[in-house]
Length: 400
Image (cartoon, rainbow, N blue to C red; front, side, top):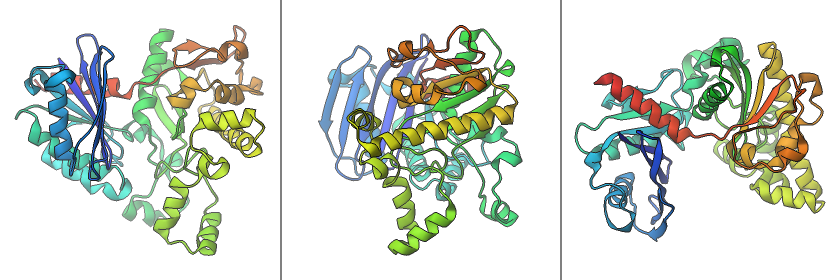
């Protein structure tokens, strides 16, 4: 069975085509700059790469180009879209309506679009992509939606509620939702498989570190707390996001700079974090600058590591223990500097790693902890697209 996985943004359409017989990636790429010209980067499973410009007024044209890429010319990997058995979509915000993946109906698309206020950059784009996909795939091809927030729906109220008037929760749906749930769920399953354990037997702190970062406490296979909150802005300092900030500091800065609520949101989401602190949102630049002695770059890295350590400590307390600390995401998998900084001075929690070995690891599934460490520390590469494809396969098969 071949499954197309789609991750639609406001101006982009990322995709992967997988053969689920062996979970092999047949093709992947991105249709970018939708509504503002158009650019395609396409890769085939055998390693060939193609880049070209084209016009994408809407997501429909992007899907039409995707069909062309997969079925014609040098980028062709299938004869027709009839070979695709189903399409799986990543959806950022499912709120408290969706606690698991589901088959798509017109009502489901409307509900996803209805949550756009909670994820304005993403959910409306997801709905546009779902409707556009229906126009270009053969009639009757099932679609499945997989929600980033669904994994975190197991959090108890004491973890997801804010100290605001209860009306804000009841009437405005303001609460912690958490994000990166698809990634956290995938790596939880992977580490349990590697250890030969049932996820129910493990207490895990999962550190998804990248341009956007979140830390999650996973007790018995279920998310019990996570660092991102009502939006992905909350938690640790990130590439361009501030992370958690005293609300009074936000209102103070907004007043002093004369910023509207929308402008302040943009300031916190796009102009803060590593970019605002040290001049670049790319941690590779930050690490290079830190080695060269740049004090702001050193500070930015110290802040990230310190904040991650604090979340680890608080989640050990929340779960009354820890069996596994794992790193995933772009930074978690590839930045030995961040892993080293996080794992220093954590002996009290039984966290001890081979620092020399850690410096050799990039993007590999591997154990970093020493033989005498009480807590296992692992790098576990994430694969959200594969998890979406697996969910899609399971739902489509069950529906037959």
